Image (cartoon, rainbow, N blue to C red):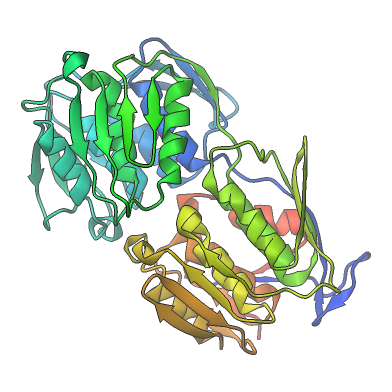
Amino acid sequence: MAARSFVAPRTAPDTASLSGTARLVGTVAIPGSKSLSNRALVCAALSTGESMLRGLASGDDTTRMVAGLRALGAEIEQLAGDTRDVVMRRGVALADASECSVHTGLAGTTSRFLTALAALRVGRTTIDGDAGLRRRPMGDVIRLIRTLGANVEELGEPNCLPLAVSRGALQLEHDSSTRQALVAQGGVSSQFVSAMMMVAPRLGGLVVSLPRDMVSREYLHMTAEVMRAFGAHVEVSDEQVQVGAVSYEGRRYNVGADWSSASYPFAAVAIVGGEVRVAGLRSDTAQPEAQFVHVLQSMGCAVRSDADGVVVSRDTTQSLRGADVDMGSMSDLVPTLAVIAACAEGPTTIRGVGFIRAKESDRIGDLATQLRAVGTEVQELPDGLRIVPRALHAAVLDSHDDHRLAMSLALLGLRCDGVAVRDPEVVAKSWPDYWAAMAGGLGLEIRDEPHR
């Protein structure tokens, strides 16, 4: 498959030179948040009455969620003219005793959420994914739904997909005065807890005790916010999550623009200099990735927001500094920060993210290998990376089937000709239009072969 790299334009009418690469100016449109999309879809699928969801994410994760919910009996209608807007006419058929199967591709969030949802069904649901997803851990959601009485068959490697799930002895709408209690494990992903939170109203409520090492716990607040939008009663503290017995009701829900996707055009301007507006972003969001702009400010960028979105800029006379950052609350942006760090003027330490070795790729080891391939000095730490910038050189890099590695590593082509990324189509997991949106919004060139 052809490699593809970004190369900044050689000339532009209103730019200044920066190491032979033009200053970037433009506006980039990004998709809706896939994290919010998948949570809203699950809540709508468990609601009474219709829901209208607008601005859903366009990537494969969300497409797989919609397909999975349909397989479980939900009636979802895409509105004419915009596949990002849907109406949930009917939710999942929990009383259906028939067997069904769901394939979730490489979508970890989708597989974990649908496993918990399938545990509410009478019928047997087989959940599987591509080879990369089969390697990702599912152990805590298996343990939690078994604790509630669901049947789970592990059809492959222990604690991994494929699984066959059915309700078994799990009770729906039990007496809320005897609300069930679970104890979560925290070292892998908060998605297991989010999955249990979202099905909890159908169980008459739930209390989940949280460990001190709960990773990405900020996402639990995001889950709670979406649940509340559909009428649920949820409280999240440092020690536990409490979900009441109040049922979901259908709603109109607007999905916010995706702050994770916004990190890539912001990174482009941090690396090269210039100014980019990302339309539709809101600072009053539950998405923890919104805090990334503070990291960029600490590295020498300027940030402002208004009613139309968020603008990040870096004056080309302002150096791009290294940083020391705990990225535990926004771990998906570690590849983005690592690429920026490779182009900075001092070392960067990324901490608090040891658990990202179990993401779509080993986002510590694989990322370090690819950065070294272009000349960067990288030390792998127990919980992160230390990156020391060195002169970059051309290389064809491997995305490791990871959309975030592909989108981030491609940005190195802005600083060094000849940097390309294999399998560019992997970006379809979260942002199918990534290449066109970045090229069109920032005036970049896309090459189908490495530039020599």
